Amino acid sequence: MNPRGAGGATLPVWTAREAQAADRRAAAMGIAESWLMESAGAAVARRVQAWGASKPLILVGSGRNGGDGLVAARRLALAGRPPRVFMPAPPRFAEAAQLMSSAWAAGAAPVAAEQLGPSLAWADLVVDAVLGTGQRAPLQPPWDAWWPKLSGQRILAVDLPTGVNADTGQVWGPLPRGIVETVAIAALKPAHLLPPAAAAMGRISVADIGLGAEPGRELQMALPDQWPAGRAEDDDKYARGTLMIIGGSARYSGAPGLAAAAAMRAGMGYAEIWCAAAGADRIRFLPAVVRVLPESAEGALLLSQEAEAALGRAGAVVLGPGATVHASLLEAVRRARRPVVVDAGAFAAYVAVGRPRWPEAVFTPHVREAARLLAVDPTAVSADRRAALRQLTDATGGVVLLKGRRTLIGQGEGPAYANWPGGPELATAGSGDVLAGMIGSLLARGLDPLAAARLGAWWHGAAGLHMRWAYGPSGGSAEDLTKALAGALPLTVPADWPEWVW
Image 1: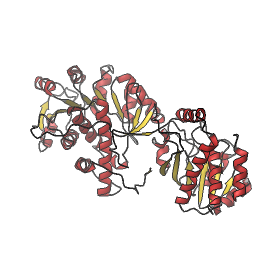
Image 2: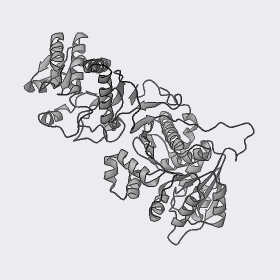
Image 3: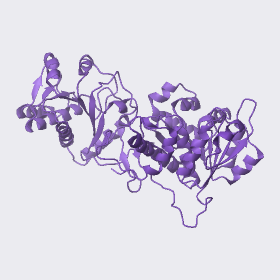
Image 4: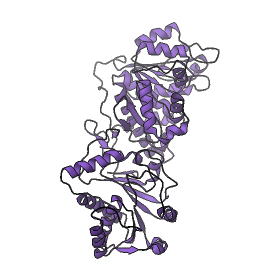
């Protein structure tokens, strides 16, 4: 898979409601539900065989997820790997009796509740076909008593691990730690991308069962759809964009420097850093012009006449890395109507001036900053990051990039975009400053705010992967991340990349 793709193609991500709508469309077209289950079960059986399992145990629920498990049971038996099937109650759909009889006839062996323990000891892979996309509540008896017994097993989950909310990624109780793969049926679901569930699903594969690849209306896993123009032979530094970075204090003098370094490596022609006097001398070695701003008695950066003139010339602004920004400075930047990245130390000022709508802005909060912008507890943001993103875009009127495990990006009434790639190597001090500088560079080079946020997040994550390949799982520093930017384009994911199977 080459993430650059053609034309910014997207990978479908369906909410539970959208998955159900796809089933209804298939039925309206005359596609039998049994045919869809046959396709899904065949995909599950192939993945069981790919793991080399010769003694699979399949846990079958009472819904269509269980039907997929029964099809897999029959196919595995016919392939010479007869499974044991634990099914405390018959599935409740029209084809259930036929699927059960065909599975038993092929050689799959049903087991009773008292045989579950010995069957777990016998199995070399457990297939979780209990509850999938439709789960909306914690496990009910008798499954809640049996689920802890899966600890220590290798598990392959059908569509989603049991105990996961498909739309939010939240989990009801701890998931088994041995999930080696999750087979998403027809399309990815939000929970495949969102924490905490996403981190517990092992490898994720997508089984095409013939429902098409219509993009989700609420969430998409998108590739960049715009790229800045290449350099012309007669370009000078100003033709490649000018960026004004406002930030940096005695305590965090490195933040604007990292933003500037990232902007220059992302193709910026000219950058100026406007910072506190106490931090200026520490960043003069960078390929950016460093200028000093006055500070309030509380240490917030203030506007100067020279800076106001610079605002009029800037192609874009990065506001807030490494410094507290005074409300009057933020209002001056807003009046200038330049494309702007609102980051870090600018959020308090934005709240102080009443959270005005700012369509030229790309806001880049992490969870705690998003909670501050929404005046809620951070746990509320973490519980449903898609809902928090929507509230932020509605409130700010701009583009919002909500950082974290699987960064989310959104604007207005359009879908949210779940960024690919990005992993734990980005969890290092200064990583956010690098991202802010990259997005600022792309804004200055002419991309619209949503395109700049999407490409900046993707490129940032791709550089993280490049850094992981260079330095190992522990990754490197934010400075290493800026150096990895050039090597991350173009990025082609190797076939054995451990997180995704396409």
